[in-house]
Figure 1: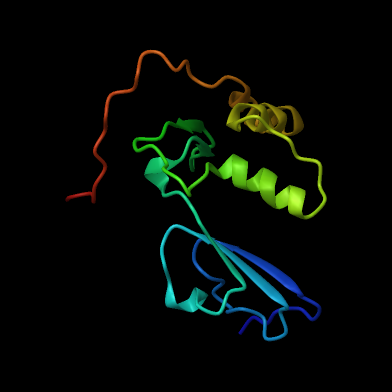
Figure 2: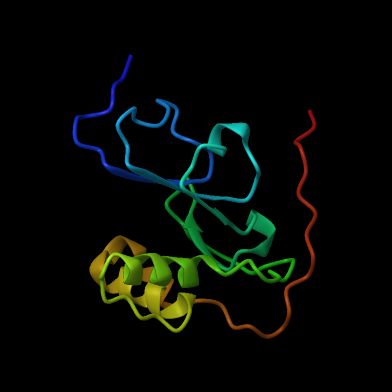
Length: 139
């Protein structure tokens, strides 16, 4: 099986824990997850994450088409939006990331990667989107 390379001192797990487990000699393990998992009980820091329904942002589907997300449920404290947590983590690492929301991040990604150009043109917030119920596919 796969093994961790030597020298992994710090680890950030976003979502489920690593399939290979936490490296045996890791000094600190930070977890950012929307579900409590027994595998994360030994983590140094656990930070609550928003679920898919609480996130604002975008993703690129398997066809390569950029799609935007609007949260169906408002995130309540102590939860923060992903872009805000990213900025906090960067500040903790001494990196100068100061974004005032998800849109500046999307525009910067679009400028850096031409294939993601659609990120620079998010949909208008008006009108409010209609609620959509997603569930398991049925034959």
